[in-house]
Length: 172
Image 1 (cartoon, rainbow, N blue to C red):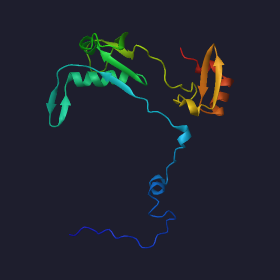
Image 2: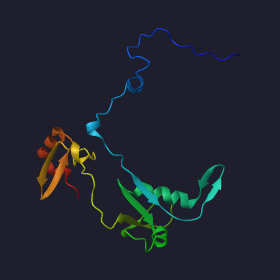
Image 3: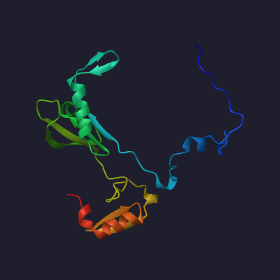
Image 4: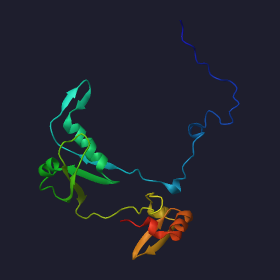
């Protein structure tokens, strides 16, 4: 049995020319407006301990715990276990703050987690309180001062939704 051969097309009903590769790649998908970039929400969890390497993969209770710690992290948060905090003791420029004991699936005992932050931590990107989108400073469509805090919005629609029911979007 022979495999089918691919033949180049000489005629195409496609209005996008072959030389227009970026347009072809984006056909059927929304092309993002560069003025409205979003930042992926990174969540990191770290645990230190022994593990097993078998058939091209790392396995064991410590691998499971590291995955659970990562799942417990919020957007742009770095969480570590006591084992990591002890090994990083004295590391300049960072601080460890306990966020308490947590129950983790597949782990018999509660685990104390620590949030790791630079000593000079500050939120680098504002977050729209309505849709949760992280904004670049140059893409903020509207701002509003609410309870002495400046809120940023990605669109007039989000600002209007907030104005109709601000209590719904308060953190707490």
